[in-house]
Image 1: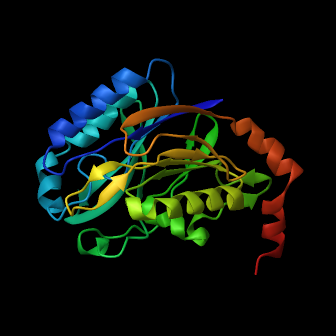
Image 2: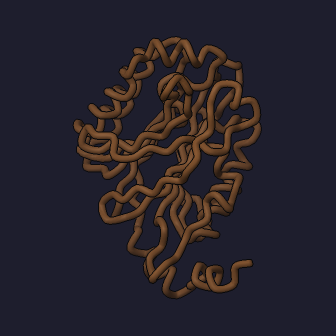
Length: 259
């Protein structure tokens, strides 16, 4: 089994230190055993805000250090997105941190409408290997584009086993998130780990949470209550993927018949 801890929380644009302390509290109160991966919501340290440039400069690397500390404290990998400057360009970047090291990153490719005013988009997908399994990090709006999420199959090896999807999906579109994530799970015969925030962001957009896990049949097998902060610890049976993919080799059929 692979154990993932998914975080559902509110965050405030101008209270970076308070947000990080709040995550410390959520984690310490809810994680009591071993976990393999902790996933936080999109732009976990501040949420979206028209002041995102100033907020990122104020952060000055503290949020990255926090992720490194968490990876050591819980002896696991941590996946989280945050605004990151690189060569004076701002990216919505997912960091995969393990043993206090950034082992991989992914810059959001599909920027939501208006997001391009603040962020530049990335240019490549990233697959991360951890604990013997392969993970595809995506960010929020990416989930609407099945071709970007497409699993691969070569020499009997699948490109990935699980999509990791931190989001800031507004309350008014939360049902769409569920449909999209479950569709990606079925199409790609994989698990999908979805985290979403609560509260309001710096633009006044409302979020209801709705963090969940979708299995490779597109079923929501675990979820957190809406509008409540919390941590959900769930065991994913990745070994079952081998059985499913052998019994129902849809990805092999797709590879042979793609147009």
